[in-house]
Every structure is written in structure tokens, then in C-alpha cells.
Length: 359
Image (cartoon, rainbow, N blue to C red; front, top):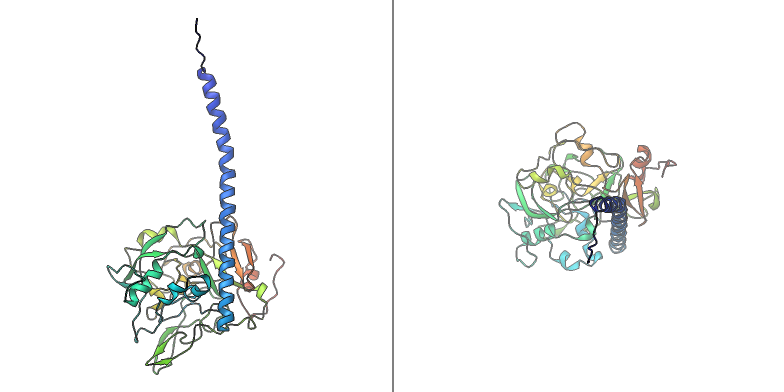
């Protein structure tokens, strides 16, 4: 007589339980491996950015400017030729609005970016919509592209996020610094000023990359040289990680940004920005951060006390801290438990501070 073999219900349940336990043990290990790989890729991105900045320095005798107010360009745009993206760089236009009006966004509903267009606006927007992997950390968990409406109520339809910001200071806690000053071609006006700050990614006052009526007002370098980093290049942060507030992503394509001090959105981008370009708004936190604000600062809603600090903070999804590129090109993981005074000192290029033992 033929007898059939099979499992009893109890045996089947035991097997399922064993498999569930094995999966439960395996998943954390897989997640740790993935995070280790993401953290390593993030560090490699920062090393490549460091090499590009050093190459820029060798050619231009200075670090790239941080944020070019009234023009809208950021430091990431100027290093494109040094990271094998010269074709994209050659399609960009950096000029004063009154001369060419080359914008990084367009009035609603906007226009698609197009590197092949004869329009400088479409080419600039194309760069803003391009996801350059070197500018994003794999752990950030952000979408590739989102619509973004600026404080001028202009839009980039598919803007690409960035996770790496230049260090502009070790002391400021608010990204709004409006001053009334003379313009190089005559007259006065209110502009944003970061020329007097103590980090590496500042911008020479008042303009850097502008031509006006056929006259040039400077090159792409902001004048901060390696020699000027008297605190030591290994003791000075140049670039760090930062995270866009994912809770405001849903509103980016619906609501114009409010760039008053203490308001706005914690959002970070590369290449260019209408919020940096727009007169007397100067949202430098889109490209820059300050070490006067703790790493992984807790989220603060716009308009609440402490939002200005939160907007200027560095941070990451890596457990316990974030990656930073020092001015000498080395990359270090700095824990968010670091002494605030030590972290602040790391952001200044010539403060003469004595670093704590926790660095």
C-alpha cells in the first residue's frame, strides 16, 4: 500500500517560526551593511568634492564663492569643470539681472529645463533639475526631483536636492544679513552680505561674478586662500552634510517661500537659486551652513523661535552624527555629541580657538 509523506500542522508552524526568527536576525544585519555602504559612498562624495575644490583653488588662487547674492549662483556650480561636468558648466550663465536677467527659475507655471535651448533661463534651470549624484548622500531618503516655488513666486518644476553645504561661519545663527551699501557701478541698495564672515565659503563683497555695461567686477574665487586658513586646514571644516526638512516637501510646489528672518523652509540645493538671486531675500542656507548650530538640530517649524538656527544646521541620517570634509581634503565623521565650543571653532578659518579633546 502506497503511503504519502507530509508535514503535520505543528511541524509547519515550527518551520515558519524558525524562518521568521532567521529573517528577524538577518534584516538588521542587512540594514547595517546597507548603511555602512551608504556612509562610505557619502564619504567618497565628500572626498571628490574636496578634490574639485582644491583643483579650483589651484586654478583660481582661492576657494569658490559660497553664494552670489543678486545673481543666484552657488559654490557647487563653479566646481563643475573640476568634477568632469564642464559641458554643464559651459551652458550656464552667471550675470547681473540688470544686464541679462539670467534666472534660476521662471514665473508660474514655469518652463522645463533644457541644456540645448538658446534661452539662458532654460539652460540654468536644466542644471537645477539635474541630479548630480556627487551632491547627494544615499542615506538622505529624499526624492530625486520636486517642484519648488521661490520667495519671488517663481518656480523650478523639477528641482534636484543636494545634501552637501559649504561652511560659511562658526558663529552666526541666522542666515539673513541685509546691509545698505554702495554698488560697484554706482548708487546704493540693500543687499545680503557674507563677505565679513569667518568660514571658507563666503563671497567677496559686494559682487563676484558680475559684468555690467561691459565692465567686469571680479572672477569666481572669493579670495579665501589656503594660506588664509590660519587655524589649519586639518582643523577647519569646509563642507558638511545637511538634510532638507521632508515635512515641507509637500508644500514646495504649492506655496511661495517666505524668506524673512525666522521663516522659510530648510531646503538645500545645488548650482543656483532664485531665493539667493531675489533682491534682499538672500537665503544662503540653501547652499551654506554654520557650525554655531548643533549637528542634527531638532526640527523647528517655520516662524517658531529657533527656526533660524535649525535652517543653518548640518546633519544627516547616519546614526549619531554627520560626515564633514576638512579644508585639507580629509573626511571625518563628527558626532552630534561634540562639545558645541569645539564644533563652533571648527567652522572658523582664522579664529585662533583651541580645540577640545573630543575632536
